Picture 1 (cartoon, rainbow, N blue to C red):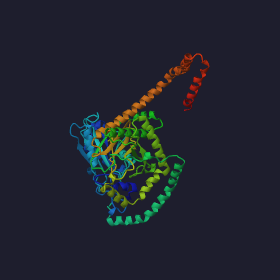
Picture 2: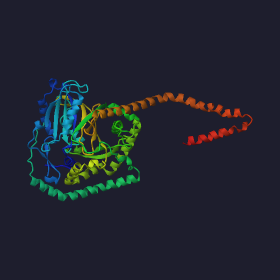
Picture 3: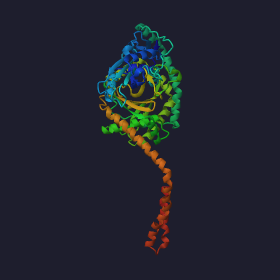
Picture 4: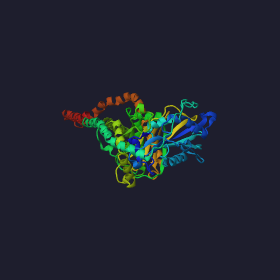
Length: 534
């Protein structure tokens, strides 16, 4: 039995019918690489069952302390049933992309049963007209509670359920998994009493660890290593209000090479800066069309992984957060990328000064009871309508495998969509994902807040196209510049000769006072002075 940490527990506390706290993805597979060229549902069940020992997440369930007086515990589920967690559906004809998105949104909107291991995989067949993939492809729509994984530990779950070749043999080590007895309420209350006594000591320890980071942050402000700016204060938008239980999901796929090519607008920018600027441009287009664009920049919460190498296979969340202004108020692609780069550099400096790891440790000593009560109050009183949120949306970046991987022998063709949880006050969230040579920007939104996800998806595409066109135009101008420089210098060399007749013209009109000719010359030299100094 292992206790959850503070951040993991916060996702349990925030769980509500309108805000299920799970994340997931839509993965598209081509069975042509599998034996006999197709995959049965029983093949998928057998494949997953043979590899469950590689993931701690799959057979562990939550046990909550009565009245949420302490953090929940993970135990090995004595009633584990694989066929409950792996489901099977099919799209009706024609089986297109829009139908897949609707099915994924419906699956994602349903809360998980937290009395069982908190994950579900739904195999979706009938993808006969999805983005040009060959007929016979199928998809996984995955759901895993955020208390169990973050983006990086989710990659480890992906590794457990995939192989690097179509015909990799099952693990040869024995499966030593053993179920555990569900603890009684008395036992859980006894443990919570001990933890309550020890919690003040843990809080004092975390506070002591935070002192150097606070001192470093103050010093950074004094020395102007970073600065506090009003650009970090988000405007109020249509996305920042109470949400419904309904969801929409959509997204776009881009060549990873094109995503990197946009950096020509600003070579020092990272791919993550490009993704933030693309999202900022899409929000600019979407809200401009709605007549609802804020005059100041919208901001995003960008999670930062603080997971060490030793914690690679651990369950739970090891993340801190950074506030990233998106430049949504700027329509020019180059200006927006430059703005995003400056602001994210400033935010990274602030986060590094405070210590991202320390920020994560602080969350581990917050009493769950207060978090649960606060979450319920926030939802029931509709405080999201009244209080300003610290950010407008989420943009999280999760790197995927750089090579093709396989499940049940079928090749993973696309990590088409990443699904993310929403809360009151946060009605839109984005995930940036990569796989082999493709990059994906997908989003999850409340259906009542964004009833037209196809339009926002097109805004993402248009924003990306604008930035790529600007980068190519800049590169084309840079390549032509050396050839045009000599031609540009010749006219500038002739300019003084062209100016001489202009100086003589007044002298020609007034030939008798020829000695006054220098005066206009002195006026011209003095008028050039400010231009040269500027």
